[in-house]
Image 1 (spheres, rainbow, N blue to C red):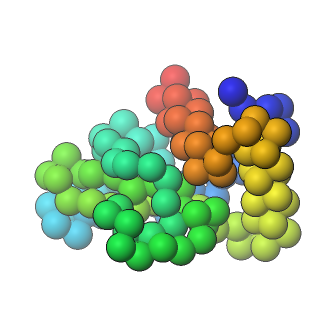
Image 2 (cartoon, rainbow, N blue to C red; image 1 turned 120 degrees about the horizontal axis):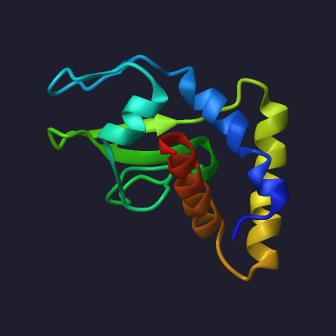
Length: 123
């Protein structure tokens, strides 16, 4: 369960991710006009990661919200990088601290955040 502190990041994350739209699938050229349409029409794949879905390339997990599949099956990415690096650093610290408090991993916390974002957008 996400703490109130982590929940306070949900709206800013949605705002940052919304800046990526409209977005188009490079394979079938489906256009996702906004973040809500994107969330409703794609399927998350795997865990939140900062690398490739198969794990062959690892990067900073805090810069990526999730990998998704378009309806055509093509893999797409939605990233959420704070243009103001201050929020990024605070978010990263809160996630790490929350993971330690809950005796879990940052990836688990980030997956919970992804789920919370998806639920909030489609409701």
